[in-house]
Image 1 (cartoon, rainbow, N blue to C red):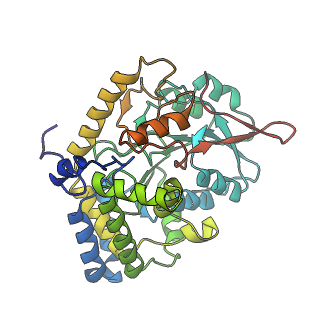
Image 2 (image 1 turned 90 degrees about the horizontal axis):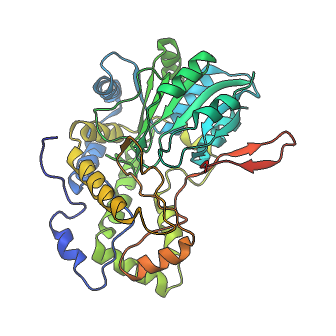
Length: 395
């Protein structure tokens, strides 16, 4: 793919100099954003006003899908909640889910009286196991919620065939799978959802795009969303300042000082980082997500989508593939998704017998890796006695 060279974030060519410091530690993840983007967001906080909302929402939606089947929401959680409000599925209806997702999606399903039913993943491709999918369908099943995890994306052909033959809605969660405008959702899915939250590819520190095939459902979702209060530009300004500071810490020399400082005062840097980047905290989830995005967020989303640094994504993919090739044959090491047809490594997961030992070893050698900071979790399963069991990778 042609285009300008990928930007080294956050400080461009100074990153190499930062990495050479004796105390430098490479962070587990860098935000996919430049200070130019953050500056543009801050300017939008001062310039954009509420009367421009319709223009910006329509421009973003048309950029995503000129046929008019997309809408902008505060988050994927917001869009998914709007979808379930609109569908009004009977209480007790079952929703088949990829067995690994974020807890908030499970919470939203249960909030609407629905029962999440996990379907195990193939560890090599991270695709849902189609045979288990077929076996999981009951007379109560109404929806299939497929999550593309870790930056991978698997073909939905077989899953769609099963869903259509059983009259199931298909919802595609692409929060971790965005890699550029060449993929804006599976056109045969009923709904596709993309996130631009803080740690996502092409982050705008919030916002999501929800693509809905059924026009009547989409219009009702839009109607409901218009009743929500709007986040303010001041709220977003504070958010940008906070993450701008955190972004600066992610350069290796400064990040090394941060980790050493945490250890000196006995703080768990995993908890510090996770709490700092969590999108919704400090209240009941549904009350936190039922807002419209601020105008400044819409302005930054439009900038990120029209100035996408796809070379950065390809560089991340190339480096991750080289790392995977280097470690895949090590004893007792497995890489979930190594055989995925499409993989852009939003995260790089590795399964080892003793994660804590690997984390400690890598930290000592200048690399911050983690075994406990991700929000991904297993979808719990109810058996016939209403006792929790769990499902995840099928081995």
